[in-house]
Image 1: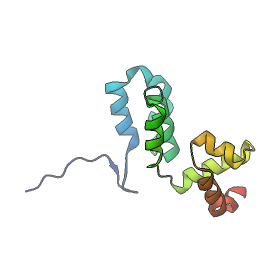
Image 2 (image 1 turned 90 degrees about the horizontal axis):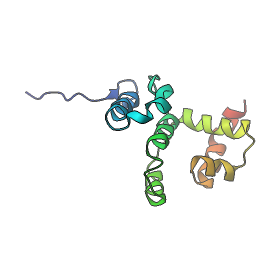
Image 3 (image 1 turned 120 degrees about the horizontal axis):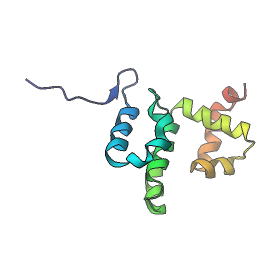
Image 4 (image 1 turned 90 degrees about the vertical axis):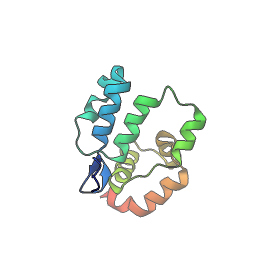
Length: 123
C-alpha cells in the first residue's frame, strides 16, 4: 500500500499553506526575525503579496541583485494581489514606472494589469 505523504496544501485552492511553511522556516532558521513576521504568521490565508513581503524580510540581506532578478521571473500573482497592487497605485498616486519599481515588476506587466483590472479597482 502506498502511504499518502503529508503535504502542506490548502485544500480549497490546492495552494501551499504558506503560514505553516514559513512558521517552520522561521522557527528553525530565523528565530531572530520572528518579531518582524508575526503579523503574517497569524494569518491563515496568504496572498502572493504576503509571501513576497515575508521573503523580503527573511532573505533581503542575503541575496544579491542577480539572485533577486532570477527569482523575480518566477513570481505568480493571484487576482486579489493584483487588485491590491493596483489599489496601492491609486491610493499613493503612483505612475506605472514608480509602481513597477516599488514591487520589482515590469512596466509592461503593470500596464497589462491596469488594462485587465483597472475598471474593477477604480470602483
